[in-house]
Length: 472
Image (cartoon, rainbow, N blue to C red):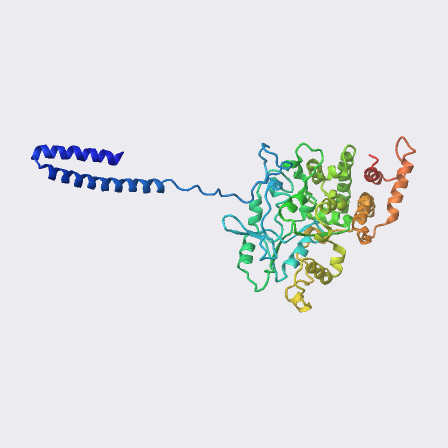
């Protein structure tokens, strides 16, 4: 249309010129033809420029940039229209595409950055030697440390906004956890090895991960449940399915006494008597909960954990079988190495070789073990307040052995290893039960010589045994 308009405009102009200049007919036709051709050429140039301009200002649609990790279409765990969770919904995140060039789980994100998760985690137990064990593992030349040196505290505390004494800490996210291994990722990304994978690995050494499930109600998939269906093991398995887990356990009675001196519970002076009183108060908290809830529910409950801390002692950490069962129900047995503190203290070299073999690390010679301080006799950390502590009162030990007796039996059945029964006095529990029988014949005060503290723990022990037998 634009060219046609120009043509007619040219004809009009030519007519005007003919009339004005009295041109001959032949010249008039030639003039009009020349003018029209020029105008057509100019019109075509304008048209081509317009077309080119239109093409450049209308870009082709680009593919959407998908964030990492992305949501999976899981209707069961991640239904559409569900409320936005207050923490990272880990179970609704896609799996990472780990690189086959590295032994450690690492991948390249959509923005091209190289990222890593830990190859192994020392998940527990508190005051069983985890700090010393993790330090010796890290001295292997093929192990790279994380940003926090040992404990990231993410799975059990930071992601929920928890700390030991409060729930008002800042919440962090999976991206923050991954960032704890940022320096490790740079080292691994720069490491090259001809003919195979790079063998460098990194780890996380947070002992609270094994037992601290207080935040289970904040996991979206547990909404509305009286007891948790999904816990830390499920979340870790979802994003890091081949991670290797290490657990080190100690006689639960000795662990508790060490833990009592370690925790800053506000007590100015600590001794065997204050410990005994704290144990009795803590047992009472557990006894009240067991009247209406299962042991599992009590151990994972936020308020019960808080009340036990206020009573100055964390007796709940000694129920190893209850916690370990959660991990063994999610991870295969060959992905979990379970050690004893007593064996570790007796022969560090033997245990460290066992750990390195479990982690598929190259075996070190005796000279290398000594060179890298793997078998050095000096411990990494010793609780200061514990240095001057006195021996635990025999009465307190009897009470605690009775308290943990059912769970210790469960642990033995779970692992099929008699060494995890430890060397407890088998006659202690029977003596306490006999005293309890004597008391049952009296409606008022018990007879002289019957210890009320021991009777209190019998109530708890009996409750635990009924729960094991399915009678309550």
